[in-house]
Image 1 (cartoon, one colour):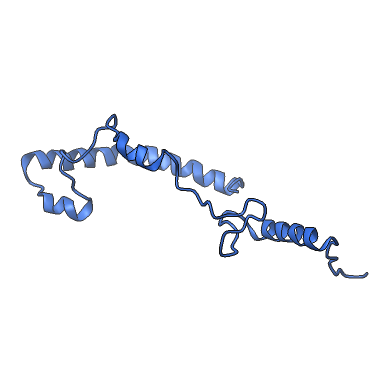
Image 2: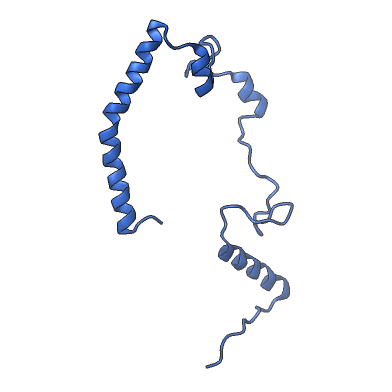
Length: 126
């Protein structure tokens, strides 16, 4: 979605506003960090805003524990309890990304395969 002229205009204006506000924001960040060097900011004040982690516990981007990857087998956590054909999980629900129209279509297809005859919808007779 979000292809209307109004949304495009709003997106453009938000981008321009970000450009305009960015220098002020950067200056404010630099002043806050500069005050930290003087000792005016305590870690208690920062802890209220963000999670404070000592630098020894932070891993470098290159550090990877191979034991953790091997324990999982290198596989992602996937929803394996979903039937590929019906798209239903073990509790009879469709995936969250599937809209109602798609769900009805899959359900109708499944029922026609079971009964062999498609269900005729009633329409208005003009």
